[in-house]
Every structure is written in C-alpha cells, then in structure tokens.
Length: 91
Figure 1: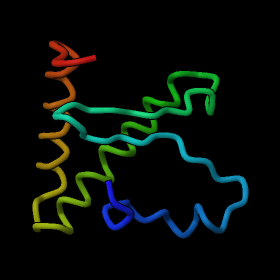
Figure 2: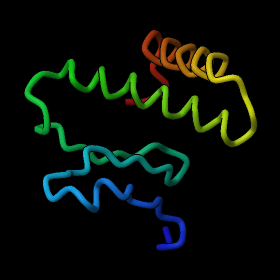
Figure 3: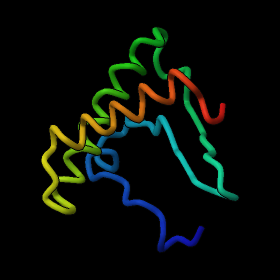
Figure 4: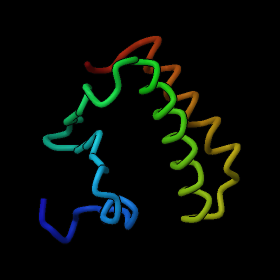
C-alpha cells in the first residue's frame, strides 16, 4: 500500500494526546487482514458499541458518496453482518 492510499487520521486524533488507534483493516491477497488493540476496553461489549457506531458512520458515508438513504444502507450493512455471523466466510 502506498502512502497515497492511506486514510487520513482524523483531526481530533491528532489534537488529543490521549487518542489511540483501535483497529486497522486491509484487503490483501483477496483476504481481510486486521490489527486490533483489544486491551483498549476491559469489557468486550464496548466493541459491540463501537461496531454499531461504525455501521452508522459507514451508512452516512454511503449517503454522502452517492445519496443513498442512510436507513437503507444501514439495513444492508446489518443484513451482511447477520449473514456473516450466521455463516462465517472466514475467521
């Protein structure tokens, strides 16, 4: 991955000396690869809250990208999540 392909670090993360990165996700060699900072939260339920917030951010991004209705995008994201939880395609 070139530096030009890297996502921007949010301004707030630069400004807050206590900020930390929690998750990185790549697609490489046709597979998903992740790096996690699991110890950021003691209770795994916090990851569920973060994932829910992330789903909403993604739905909003689709709205800004192509005008898609955020509730429709969120429903599609949720459908994909539920399908993957029911029958994982990878680990």
